[in-house]
Image (cartoon, rainbow, N blue to C red; front, side, top):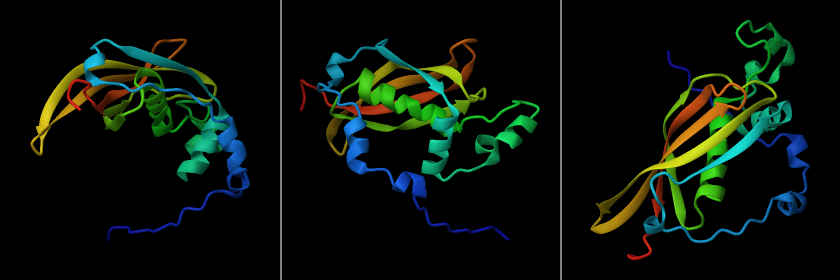
Length: 182
């Protein structure tokens, strides 16, 4: 018989006690300019260097409600012959691509349609340094409901900074405005 479990998400107390105003104050205020399809080029790219600390992993576990011991239990992590320590959630690792795309490579007026074909190839362990990169690999337009829509496809890649081993990769599609065709 299939399992059908239901859980209600509650923000963990330590996070619930944080002051929203203080959190907002500490979020960097970046200025984005509008991004237009006709101004983007195949080969445009951006990257982000991240040290994935235990604190980042624990905070993500609390936000995602994913407390699998492979991520959060230090003793369990030490017992893992393959890794010898805890590893980051795969979705946490690939989620850094959102910041690269939305805050660095492109600007305002862009809708991230999703990340496709995400493949996790090697684990990211506590304190691993990774490089998250996004590169425009394709531009195209489609007619949807009688109107032209403009898209950019991105190659997303996360590599271990020290070994250059691929941790994860995939593709992402953005819906972008065209300056010459509002």
